Length: 120
Length: 110
Image: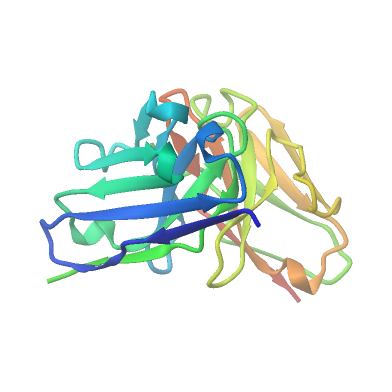
């Protein structure tokens, strides 16, 4: 079964750091570009970051560039999102998603999401 | 990068056709042919419904169709069914090498 499983969400205080993980199964992870997409409570989808195959290229939304770092470990079929200097505006469900073809054309497989709450 | 503009809500009766619009700029919707549409039911992850403007992934009903003209894209749902009630988001690759979603449209089946 094709699947993405996120983990690592939780409650953190403003200014703290957290790392999210996304484990892939059922497809060739190393051949797939991957993205993180988030959704604040009651709000719409917001693309956060992407990484190409082999981690050669990374892409970020302006609001997270310099604070978030996307990476991948193909030996573990795992995608990561290191998040630093977190603020309340980062509170959201974070989804990992597999790119259909190119890095940022569309996303055909999504995880179930992991919730991050940033609050004091 | 601002979100693409979608109507907040669209409704229709079973069997009818509805169209959701998505307005962008020459830097996103108008730039490339990478326009996608996603369906999201409450509490669920999004599901890809249309990619590259008008292509349907395997398993997606032919009642869903997409188009684009200039800086505006559209998703049409024909033969509306109760199961189509959900939020729909358009999206596009941008000239800034980022990805932008639309503001989202809630579809209600009357």
